[in-house]
Image (cartoon, rainbow, N blue to C red; front, side, top):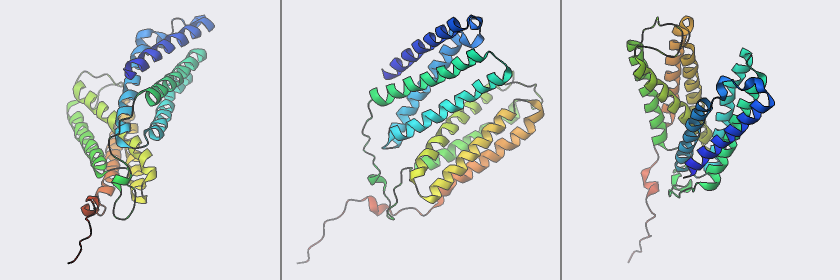
Length: 280
């Protein structure tokens, strides 16, 4: 219900901003990014992704607002990068300004709708229940680190499959005529991996030194791989992009491996304390 409310409210805000923009600058009425099918589709996808992120965050940490706010700001700033590129291309300044304003308004609407309306379920997991024998508070479980390793491994395997199915000498561009399914899977996995890397990095600020280093190395590796993916757009940079993707994946895998090879905690700590025995 909250997802529908967020989407509808964001679309209404979009329409209002586009109407305002075209009224203030009539020359932007035919601007391609002001078509409803254009910004409407992106808004629905973005808000749905934010709703999914809130669902995941509320089950990963006992402080979901703290983490979700930082994720929302990070994603919004990332969405401004293409807008700045439009500025650099020389597209209408007023139109691009309203696109940036649109991203900000959608982020504010969606964030407030989720954290204020959507209920946060008590999943029974608290920091106290995740304490280890040394007394450190483990916010990130070993399962989370292992999941990130598996995602990196899957990304590498799909990358190799893409290398075999997609012609290396294809022309510049994202749209391809051969190996399209593999390329889409590769991109989707990369999106999940990037989202997971941001969550782990944010949570690791409350962890120990090893976990903070691991999360940083993992995020850097994922970032390097993402840059390599963008380099593959241009034929002249494709080889460099492939090398960066491999190095990034290897770096991220090593980073997320670090906490899993740390000394395992004594499982007896999770057992309820036994009542002291009385000798006869």
